[in-house]
Length: 231
Image 1: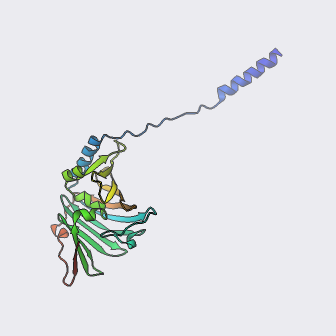
Image 2: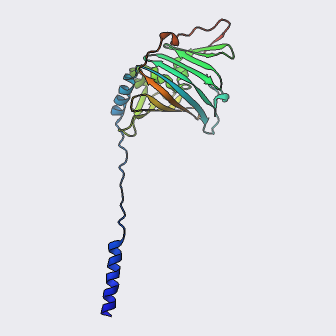
């Protein structure tokens, strides 16, 4: 019995010795930046962005709630992907041209935004604030100090250049706006959740930072015969 007991114990100890060691890797949770740090980091990103040229793809989807038609936004924009080109010269100059599936141009050099639809021979003239919710990339051309006065900034992971802006005003056209930057400081995507229960995603490609852009790009004169609508 003693010999059997010794043999059994030896077998058990051998099994324990040969059992694989399971490694448990603990991943640290991301450390968020403080609001002050996040704001400073975003300001630094925007300050270093003097001009930008990029292609874009924009899609707006509804979360299922009943939506209300808003200036510059109609039902035909939902669940479609619009492609085009964007050009920005800070501060205040912005050019956004959709080339597919239909053509539309949005351009501004300051407070007034022109929205030109060549198929309808129509140009809408409205204030900059009314259009931000429909074209969130407009924030890239804004005055940095004004942006920081209007929004609270969060940075979920202090090591990543991803920020979320939440309007301070309760009657804002959108709930929050998130933006991510690449290592070289160009935006890669933006996600906007508006007050109508819709999410707009804008993805950028072929982005070129601090390039020379002719001033004429941002000047808009309605072609002869264009119907001008003030909003």
